[in-house]
Image 1 (cartoon, rainbow, N blue to C red):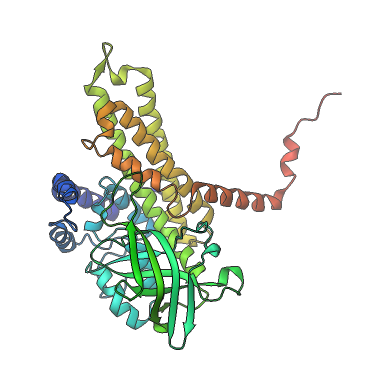
Image 2 (image 1 turned 90 degrees about the vertical axis):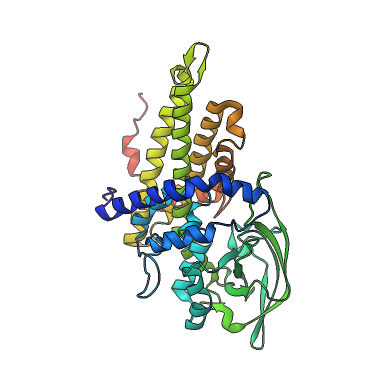
Length: 415
């Protein structure tokens, strides 16, 4: 495995970083002011998106773009370092049409949409004309185990009738969100991993009620993490995505690359936090010393650098595996990065916040916002505990091939 960036990727890294520094970073204050004033989408987003598209920095995440589809068909390994740069500013990925959950939804539609679904929903998403949401998580069950999902998708002639309640549905409050990919049960009596299906539900379908936009750690996201009720929602059977019973498998296919995107953006946020911590440690003095001259702060800086480098290499390895052997073969590595990186994200941000003192928890730095989202990521796409259990289960299964072999390294007691 060679994790060095190719000349192609290095050139893209420079272009994405220059775009971010020249066009996105100067708009951060305006973005915050407009969102605080209730203006959303912000007034300049379409302008920035058009500029990114014109410069060829568009749909960078999708490896298998077809001829005529807008974007750059990068592998997961090629896209990962670009996602890291986007992670420095929480909303930057939208400018490049690389924002979750639209990326995962575009991957799903690209994988199995019918020609009609592709024309109606995929192409507008690829062009950045609409936004989308992925409706899986439910408040009444542990949705980290998708077999628990209770939303019912019942066949009625040429329609499906949907009843259920979802929550923490990202993007659902965005005014441009026009389509939900909803996961529910079409056959509750089937084998546990064949009960679920996915259907496309236009947002304006009668019976779709957005109950509330749920704050995260008292942090308000204008695009929304919404609670939604689907009450006798009727859509044609042609809105089925893939086949009946394929929902669980499609969810797993969607989440693999998406977890890499999240993790690399988190590493970008941690990298920014470390940069800010280092600068602050050289500017501020306490008890006659610069902060970096105090042992504990120097240790924070050193440990943060070590941990970021470790995490980045593991994510790049995972991206390489998905590219070369597929997401199924990389499932342990996908769980490893998902359990590791959000904790890294919050740990480095927390150290930087502490280094800044009271300023670190104020809106004068991006650290509190980055920390908040890092904490939320410990639930998103599966909580830490589920991934740790999955890793352990794979390790135990793999050990069966050589069980007892390591006993040769044990020293018998002296007699």
